[in-house]
Length: 217
Ligand code: SAH
Picture (cartoon, rainbow, N blue to C red):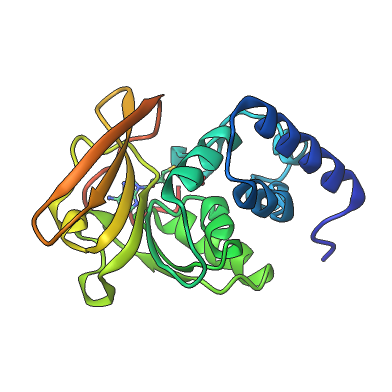
């Protein structure tokens, strides 16, 4: 299977140039996005739309976040090589691949079976070393924590307490909070008991839901 070609590389370069012009993103983030073939994560027939700055529909009625949102969440997360990162909402696995490309040790949870299966397939084909889990991200992964960073890619009504508890001291969580529209929120764990939150603009995500969905659609 030909995974990438010069045409997609050209479109991808244009996408990262547009992102660079739109915001002062960390260059490492843009370089990682320049290396990940986003067109392989979208549904067959949608490849030509993969490098436009817009969200796209994926299986199970979910959406792949627009490139600007992926760049912003990754930028805010400030991932360092070898950090343990927990992601809630694997979706198609694109954000997961970007985090792994930055050298993070990534653990990602998805509640939709079809998306979990799809992400396993594409990330394995790209030889992306990540740990994917099918389950409810509300609880996080206490046995594997604490995590240096936690990223939530669905809109949470409020910040789940188990996720706060699994953040390492000195660690950071990036989570869109709110129903309907979300406020991008950064939670820094300063000490065992102190957290500091800051907000970073309005976004629109699919909702964070409790439990798992076993259906294939
Ligand atoms: N980063 C992904 C975003 C996908 S949309 C991408 O770019 O493809 C958000 C995802 O969060 C959806 O796939 C949805 O099924 C998942 N999700 C929602 N609530 C969840 C929960 N409680 N646990 C795990 N995943 C959840």
